[in-house]
Length: 379
Image 1 (spheres, rainbow, N blue to C red):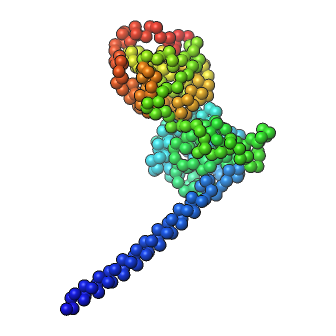
Image 2: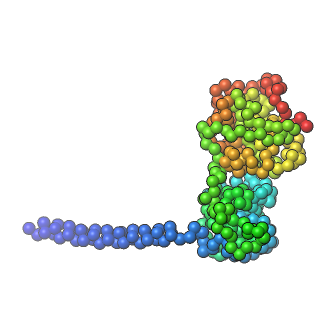
Image 3: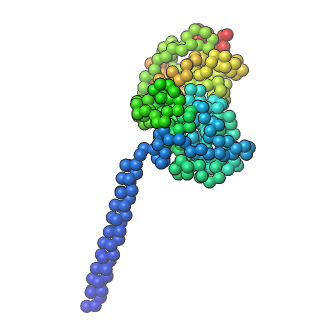
């Protein structure tokens, strides 16, 4: 008789505890929901800083111990990037920083990296990025705290006059978009007001000052199945280079820059493909002036066709502003694979089997098959 009543009593006690526990869980969920609502209602600038505010000043040492201020980097747009070498996303971004030309992208902004954990911890990725961006070191997170940022990689654009000129962004893609985008083209605020004078106290709220999320310019590259946009650009050796002239055969289209380290590493491999294979045809679209491209082509012995785009005119059509990147285009002008970023990914495209592809051939046969094609090193 006693034992059943003990079971009933224990069951009742257990139910009371479960109800109490459930109440605490519900209370915690409500608290979390309230916190989320506050975050959603907060201003889109993740820090306490607003677009148009003066960027907090700082002075930090570089790898050699020489101290630098934010002010000495002004006079052009600066993308301030907070970096931690133990962060996988930061190391992913480091590979993209290494692909920049020296001292920042032409027509874009100067990347200024504020790194944590000291010189030794950052030495490996800094070697690849030498000359591509300025790297300064904070002791803990004292500068990040000034900007109210608690994650990496995160940062914002600072205009020529030292004012916050973009919303806070996070992640490699968003930060690289800030670096690559010319002022005004990607919805980045500049220091110029309507009359063209510098130093306006607050940017206007017009279309040109909206954040990157409002930009209609895609930056993730065209996808497989899309038609390759047609283009015609000046050839390095004279005349014009048009994608249309290659219709009927596969094309490996590569975007490059004569001052890009990974591009220089890739170029001899592309030349080997050009000399030893009938398909795909190697076609390069490069940036900067003809003379710097000519010097690079001659130094590396490049003979495949090279076209010169003005700033990012063709890159914009293909929706990515990095170098080196590549697209494999089939005989009909259709993109076969998603965009490839970096030398390894681009070279992998050349191995993709295509219907009607000639595949690997001997150098003699390759040269004969290309006799009707113009050479990039003709002049």
